[in-house]
Length: 386
Image (cartoon, rainbow, N blue to C red; front, top):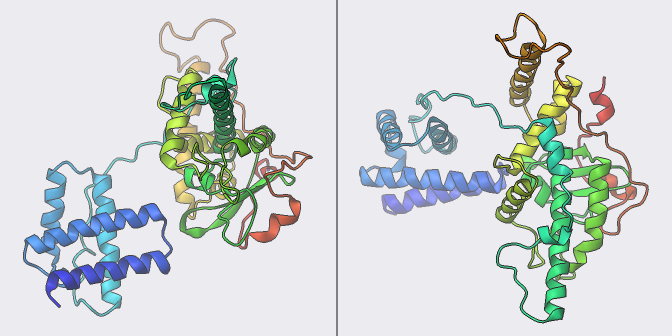
């Protein structure tokens, strides 16, 4: 077997390893495949087999990628993919020298996650236009003519609006990742990655690394889900479609469409920033931490494996406290600013506590199905108040 064919076989075997044994997320697998393809191209151009690459060569390639405009964060991801590949080759006994272990990416700043102010987040989830049907149609979903077609388009648009509202409530009210939200099914089952137990007021989701967890669902989200369940039949055309959130074609909603719908929803709510799904997760974490001060509880709710990932929100919380201090303390005020008598900083509200709806919507699971997800970790809002 020639070197290029052998290199391709090694990469294919490693990608199978991360998919089957490490069970990395599909997005991570795709990034690894792209970064390893870059590695293979550079090795082939240099006339080297992947097993013959040395550390000085990796450093040169990294410098070239940096000079081409790759950010430090991207370079760190590239090195992570390459390092994992060579770690695996070492365990297979295919190399006698690890060419990436001693290579480090350029230092990058740690930007704070972008979170909405409490008032903006509440305006987003409470945005209700006078005519809900006018909010639903995606670009290009025009009526085909005739009263029947126009009525069908209007009903579909209304269903899409109801669906979008339920998604916004879940993203902000439960702090879900977009993949966790779109992975929800109507009911629990052997293949289900997640579902909502309306009676218990909980969502069972599968996060990064296949880790299951249980998070509370707010009463507002449960009400929005109940409305969506009644409208879902207008979009879910295949009878056996398991997905809770479906698109215009009746199948599981794609991440691209969900991002576009959320951005349009935020624009209709009058927000002057681009709102993406992860911003609502950041907002959830920041607002719960501001209200509770319970970093460990926020870690459980977000499903972070390490509390170091959650600690970034303490920096957001400190920024909030700094603004309150500057507005309230007489020695912190700038000349001529905020010195009117009686001026006080506004109070920020928290995320509503979860609770059962009392009535299980027809397309959501009931309490009897709660224990089907093995390994789930429950984080209650009562724990957050301690």
